[in-house]
Image 1 (tube, rainbow, N blue to C red):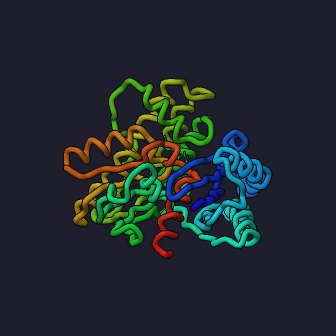
Image 2: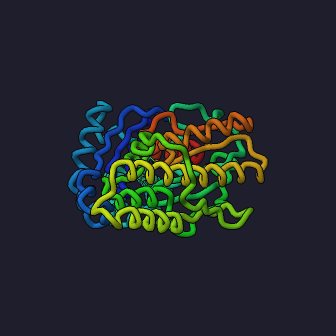
Image 3: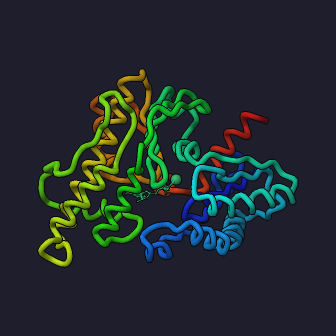
Length: 325
Ligand code: KG4
Ligand code: ZN
């Protein structure tokens, strides 16, 4: 059975093909270069780029899988959440194909797909339930109690910005490129000093599973402005130090919330999802703590599956389709 999966929720045009539950081809066209000008994704610009790219990506992925459209049995596409103009491009193409080829169509939830990215390259038994899953990216930042494959309960979310958004905005404040996460991670790794905790670790209520990053973002802005008072730009050491202090504070908040939720609910595993989960410091910190506290820890097997990609849409669609047929 061939399954064709589309993901266009933000700024990646990604299409994947699965054969009997195995990923056999994926092509992704990123729009990072185009969005670097504004340092932010303008929805209408993203949608226009998806529309320009989607048929080229489709041709490439079919060529890589060495199959034709007529051989596809099931079609799936991300439906929400995401940037509406971007989502509509993928959905229109996917639904039109499903209609003209008379094939079943599956609408996929983007966050659930990020969680299912953890099944790529693994057996279904590799995620022991119940689990706590931290889904953290540019557009979302939640904690889920993942009770069984298709049963999840949202137990926490951000009250303002997501961690990824905070990375992007802090990068913009310091004149760095978009997306902010990877470049801040790199610069933070180059800082040689000790962590001083110059930014607030906002945890909200003691037992709350919610997040807030707007206070942290404002504190970084004040620090950047203070350091720029007597010079037109930040020097390299200032940029590295702010990147390091900011990143470590985000990592401290995210890991505190994840382990607090794990302790409050009697869980068997900890799972990371979303592109911020590709952050090395976050992964290493959680992996180390999980080892000490004896939790089974999982993150996508490759960073490709942490960021927006159609393979996560396809793997979720595959499991949903198998369950319903
Ligand atoms: O999952 P994703 O591709 O899109 C959404 O669904 O929103 O996440 C994009 C976000 C961006 O905000 C980007 O700065 C962040 O993930 N990001 C990172 C890293 N790589 C990407 N944040 C921290 N560290 C990273 N290494
Ligand atoms: Zn995403």
